[in-house]
Length: 82
Image (cartoon, rainbow, N blue to C red; front, side, top):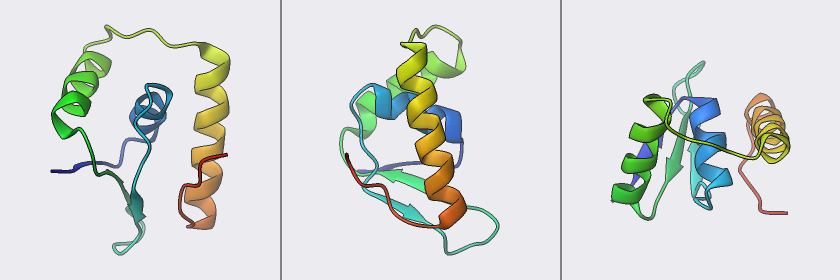
């Protein structure tokens, strides 16, 4: 089961928690969907905590990942782990 979101900061948070996107769907411009293929239940729990404001993240790591994700979305390319 997969988890999909178009919420870029949420996706960046999920990445900081170790959930890497499997693909990014650009098929419906200007919208996109970041797709996480594994651990959908765990990701839903993290997303719920994120939306409730109950999460903490290391700010420098979050900012670095958010900038990388925004660059990827602007260029309409796929996520690659560094």
